[in-house]
Length: 238
Image (cartoon, rainbow, N blue to C red; front, side):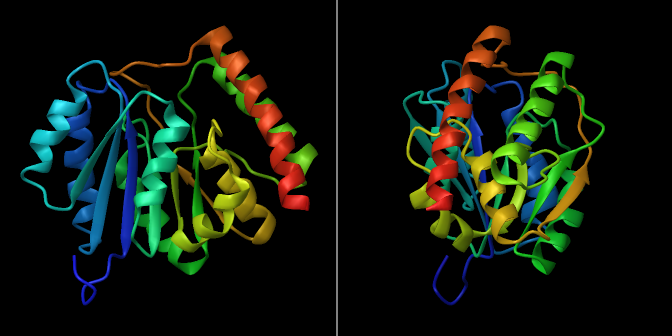
């Protein structure tokens, strides 16, 4: 796209071992997002997939000029998301996952709300995840309130729209290696704009792909993320 036709929205989607779902995920994006926002781009970061996700993406990109595929060594969801954020060129940024658990029919309402605010944070409701993850989500919600005094109903929901300038402002406070940059961005927005919109979005059970973080590995990951939250609290309070 040229300077005379600026990009309105950058859609950023990390992907890892999603060969069974990635083509459908992109078709849904074309239908519900790219058709609604013509001057949009889609950045998919293939985080070192060991299946055919990367090959499928490259084939799809050959027929979709708005799709940019980035291949990187496996470094985790947070690193993939950050790579996409750094490449985004749109006025707004839309963060979403490739597992299709949040139906893209919810995009239109979230997009409308985001443009009336600095951004809009999706809240999965009703949540279709195992009890173990729901308990951890409650613990994260309490920890965020305890540390930052902001009320976020679903801070790590992979369905957010916000001005790219927010990432530009917050980037220096969210170091490389952060496990959940999406969550940190939600905290940053809620602290700076207490009235930031939190919009319910539907959620469905995951039927394809690989859940890369399970049970005790998830607990260890959360413990590491909590330590990063403590560092983030110092950074935003400085």
